[in-house]
Image (cartoon, rainbow, N blue to C red; front, side):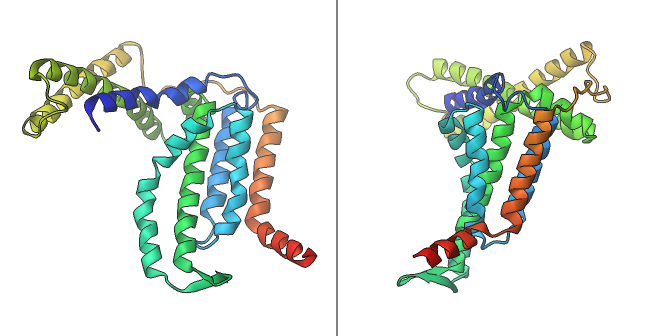
Length: 271
């Protein structure tokens, strides 16, 4: 990725934070209810065995319904979700090569266990990433971090999440300004020459460290402390409890009952 592309990616990173400022039914839900429901959903998705492709398909309703109710742009979330594909694609490809046993056949077309595990892995990954992205797009980061502290998540872990999330933008801004200066001094050269890449990366690291120290000093001057008590929580409303129970019931139903198989048998009996 070029340096302007990196800076542009840094700016796009906070597009989800802008979406979190909307006022919809999903955005108004209690942050704790959304965090717990996200954990329940991901736990249910991860708990399936590696060949349960059909049983994972009904879980697509969860992100689809929340995207519709939260008035979120599907294209943006889909692009962010697809970024996780390279991390699971190679593991899935090995399943295609190693697991060649035939699970079942569709007409004369055999379906191997490797095919099932490959697509189940991809679908499981996309579902979990989509759930986290929807949580980030419907909950302001400050409210999310405060809720994690109220859940007694270790302060160092929450602080690292906050600083890493913010520091990506700092790194992208520094790389963008350095690349602009480099282009002004290098004429018509596109990108950073390989002979200059080591020096460029070293200076970027030094500038980023210096910038991070100034940011941290400014935070300390304003009274920042990891041991600060979390913001007071507002009570769980009836709608929040209904949402949480609905998600839990949905996940339990499709986790413990093989409804796609039952529906297929029922349709087969009618035909």
